[in-house]
Length: 485
Image (cartoon, rainbow, N blue to C red):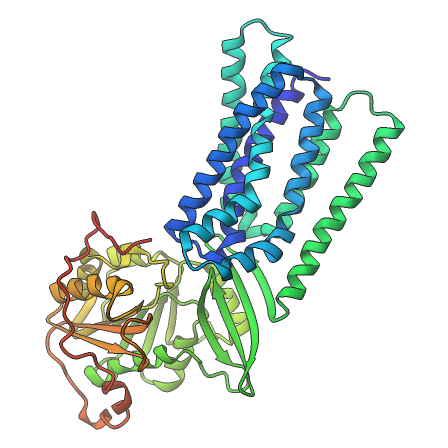
């Protein structure tokens, strides 16, 4: 065995181990979301599994550490990663649907799918130290070098996985690649590779390919309505075609959240709450230009450009792949001269853009996954400064009006009241006030410029206004945002 082989194994094991953390977030996100709760669960479980792996791996290595045992460990690691697609559709999907408590669901899903591969990969470093200690006398230096290589591998794996592989290759293909790399690593360090061993390896590889193939097959069987399953730099994205009440809808799902959907026959947007954004023309009859933060499938901009022939709209959508999906799957025409797209973070745009608007629409919240940086007093002050006189901000918020699930709207309402001269709140559905639903929060700079000619058109929406909403919550600030997750 060449001297550097063991160091390379340690480096790659570190890269794969940390890469699993990012893979875990993508695998679990359609079922439990990608909120702070989910990330905390994933990080905690993987770190706990790695700690246990270092400890038990060290104890096993002290008894009998040799190259062939390390080779076997890598094969077991390959076996554990090959099961990820099957566990996703058989266990995670069912478990997430059964358990209402998000923390419990996220922790259990992370344990079932990722604790074993994380544990096994962590045993590589203590094995490497023990094996190399037979050749080197300076154990402290050796241990430091192995730990450093593992950590450097983790850093490289994190950057490579997050910035390149996940958006370009996708989690499914990455999982196949990781499994194959672990097998190759195992074969390369194995001593005495006789015919019997090679036959076992061939059988093992065929078995793993069968397991992974079954995982992909089971995913398709379990989700026959998914026509696109892809990864961007920011999210795992599903496009579905769902039939309901004689109509077929094309939907865009990010994490657990249904972001947009259209009627495939008419091309009309399906989300009821989006129609409330049209209230801007009732409250400000002179509004000419609009900014939308959060494009998703661009169903509202498509509607807006069709309805208002003399108005313009700018869209801030951080995810380029989301924009491409809107073009390919939802009929977005990016050559429309009245549409301008900014591939930028929403808060960054508010902070630095010099543009002025009559209307700003915020549709970047995904249920429990709230980008807190768009909810704060500072962010809303920036938005207000971008408005022309009598302009307004309309924000879609998923929250209850009363009870434990009302915290989001209570904090945001207090913050809007602090920033804007006039604040209005509309409920989209006439359901229990303790049930989460879409709420439209409106902050108006200056005076109302109501267009009474439009009153009949928007009568049904105006009747859904929540009058005299009260909150005693403090405002949300950049340094204290209790609704962020």
